[in-house]
Length: 242
Image 1 (cartoon, helix red, strand yellow):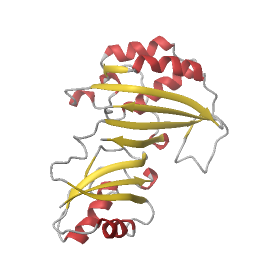
Image 2 (cartoon, rainbow, N blue to C red):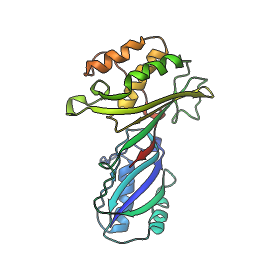
Image 3 (cartoon, rainbow, N blue to C red):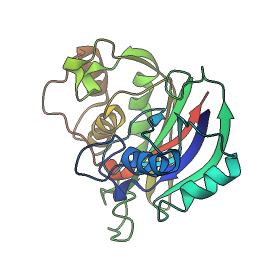
């Protein structure tokens, strides 16, 4: 029986999503709980992986169980197993040909940057830049990223990727209470792609780089030069659309 779940998690509690030996991960915690219920190993297949410190408001995944369990009971069991660090908002039975990764049409991520005074309370949830940025320049620069492009320059492991072509449908930028929120909607994102893009946008917003620099990096199609990657704490998987 195949089940489809939607869930959220606090990325600061985990060493990333993907199961790894000897460390606590989102996949590992969920699979361990499912194994106890199922009586043998269960493979959790998510819409995608998130890195260490990255949060999810609405992650999605599927898995197969040998038992037929009512959705309500399965959801209740899972949420009782996670100590509040992961929360399953819905469980539903799906056909065996449904795939949580390959059936994705769009994903929405947001990155949050604190431009105000340092906040120790939010340091694991909003990137603490604590410097004002030129938001208009960031908006202008982000327009170069819209549409279909080869984003190899913004992929951390580009040498191991055959296809780095992705489509970004929209980028929304706005400020609320000194926090800059940049929201990306696309058909998929490469490893650390958004965090690498945000690092360049920050440099543009600080006046360290010209707007044209982002276009140059994009067209270069190679991760070369002194390019940075911002912390994972400010990144959230907002939504997965099927």
